[in-house]
Image (cartoon, rainbow, N blue to C red; front, side):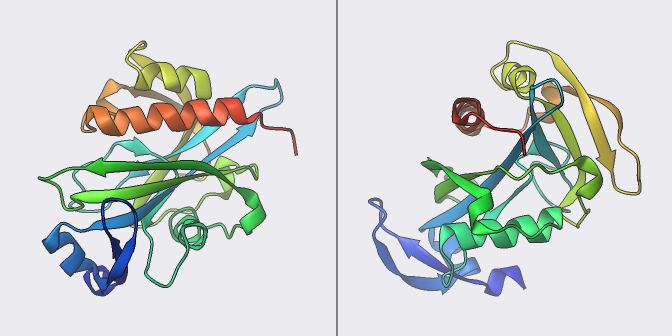
Length: 211
């Protein structure tokens, strides 16, 4: 069970203090590591397309929202990049090599009313092109959507009311046109949306190259 997973916990400066079960870390409000893996590719026209997950885990406060393709807790025995590889395999169904991942940076987030009250988040970009047809569904990811980066950034920053893209939901074998609206981002706090924005800008600045 996930509550029995062993996590490292840290002080506010990021110094590792020890290990506890995931349930104990959440109970005590300890600083701990999360990892999020974004994925992007250049399409035939040279436009950057980002892959998003549709969250579907039962009980998830962000159920139905879109997010980075994979994310979750880093186990005590893992480095952040190892956690990124494991989460991507679990949630997207694709095994990544370490060289497929580029580090986008880290951020700290406090949410006293949430399950994860204090987290140090590590962000990665998968530079290996991932097509919608390659993705696999799980109990956490009930679908995947691909949208143009600049359009999605405008939605995240409140400059657009919607953005079109392609999507596959569980049970669908063929990608179909979809429309994302601000409702798919509404449950997120301004701090989380700020992290989305920073990651998307970092992806833009990275300068993807065609495979």
